Image 1 (cartoon, helix red, strand yellow):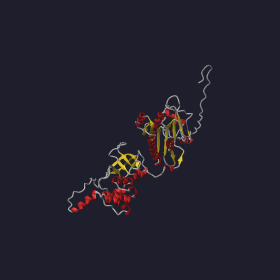
Image 2: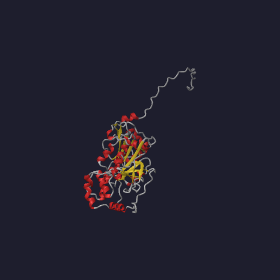
Image 3: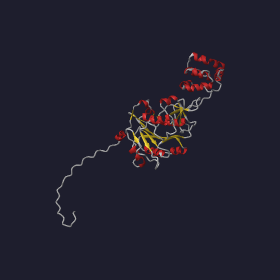
Image 4: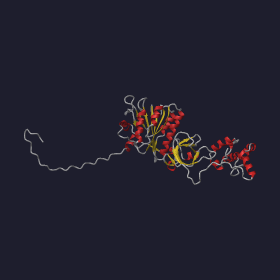
Length: 412
């Protein structure tokens, strides 16, 4: 195995060092701290440690080193004994020129269980061109699976399979400095929705919602109704209408749906779409919802307004359904996350319920059963029409009296 540079090891996470120590067969590596573990790996590889490490760590690994000396050390001793330098040097991987600027890459983030991850330049497809992201980078930039990030890349070293991201410059189209503010969303006060969301008057099917169940930025909207009542149809119309509103980041998540429905959703051009069919496990469906909710929460904390549409909450665990719905909020002095979901019945905690009629045209709204909590706040947010100015009194003009009509003639 090739000799590993000491600086690389010191910059590597402890989990990566454990994996390398296990491969090298170092005894008791899990009980070592990072400095003695780095020394043990270097010694097993036949390299000279950069400085003297603790004697206790050296004693721990000494039996293993003495019983099986590395071949690299013996080979280097023979080269030194020859003294004429005639032995062929160890091949070194070509390195880019020092003054050459690093290449940049942009792609979708996929996180692993240990916190590290990869940038997938080809989208969700794994490839040899994937870029490694350390757990420290992902944690510092508050990355979630599905984020699109960009930044410079360094080539893979001799002991690495993938290139690594040097730093993260952009997150979802904005600079990393603007995207990360370190504030937890649960620490921000929440207000009742007050900024009314209005739709294009051209879509008459949404007019009953504006009348009977208006909602605003930060609302928890639940579309309820029996099977085949048109919940999915109405959700799609809402998604198209919301995507046309400037300043809203719209995402649609379909879980537990038919494969054909998921394919139709993914052809939508006006919003981001993610999902899983009903064949996926509950854990997989929950993970898709959690990732989408987290993306929306990050937008809200950063001061933006996000809308997440979910079809459907039916089939998810009760805890997951309530957590997804509860994520909606209107943050004070920040942004908002609006959740609009379909379900067979109300869950509790909604601010707006849109009830679909059991009969008639699919998507028909039962205006008498639908409603919104604290709707008066949303009404106040509507643009008010300026009060009409009183008319000025008309000036009376003196007009010549008309002659009275003759008998039998019509009055002019």
